[in-house]
Image 1 (cartoon, rainbow, N blue to C red):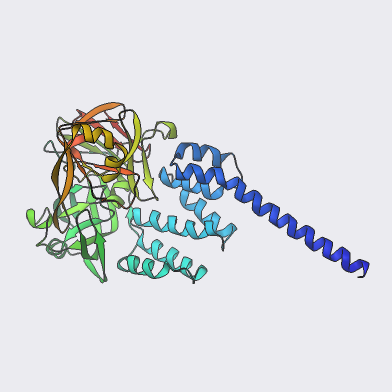
Image 2: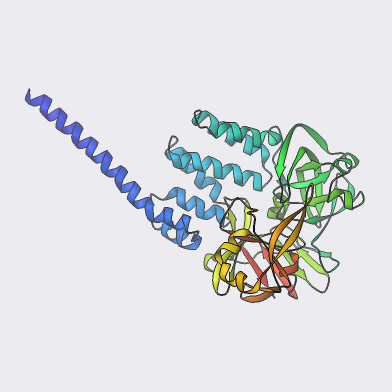
Length: 412
């Protein structure tokens, strides 16, 4: 073999070896960060990723779970730096969730189209297209300046009096709703523009068909919004069938994120849109799971647990993962029972383990469910979610603040 050929092969081997070392180094470097993600140690992930110049994807994830606006540009940078990588594919998914959370449905359509062009062979594309079909062709929600407003409540609600296309409604705030919702007759009365696509929404009770409609203008307190899209449901199903026209609607997560802060006081006031507190990860007890569902960290018997936070839920539902984790406690204190859940589409009864009381610690405060119904059938696709926290728990306090900038639920 000629000497030049030998040198050429040695150079190729050296290059290949360097590439392999870089790949192994990358995998080794990512392992501890992946473990922090799996353990949902978000403040630790944020700190660790900030120290690693090559951890752009993990910095973006940490920003997204804490609702930091920088998450969008960080995920776009991940895609730009390595467009064919697995992290790029996941960055597209995170961006899609961020856009849905904020009601930016045109941006959702654009990012999905880009993802499908870049990863045409992914088996998930068919289900993504089906799930996102109702939002294709919808505009981006536009938010006016944040402004403080004082509202009044009846002692057990988060009211959302609003003006939609110039007409007054009495809706309520529900962060457990990924979309703002409205009934068919209500949408027609308010002059919303209906889209042609239909979809199916999975709720706490069953799957319900819906279509989308858009309001040109929405005013809540002193805040104004444009191009606000609502999921439209039949008038003859709960909860729409339980209330009169003018009340058949829910202000969901896209508008709540824009408003930002909610200060509820037992004296009958609800103040929205106040200046948020400073974001300090170590003091935060809220995250956005996958960028678009609010999850609360609490404690039971001193052990940290995660629970969905649902301002639209009247009662707190405790899920099967709780029963598995604390089986000894339930064997000692519980009895067989049944629990009814009411949601969009109707009500369902589930087998449960009932205990006279269940004490949970939230924001350092002890709150007690009396009684508590722990479902034995899994109700949430996330096996680390132990409960869905409703108003019967956090409204035991004299006041609370939900701050989606500081990412804290603060109890008084």
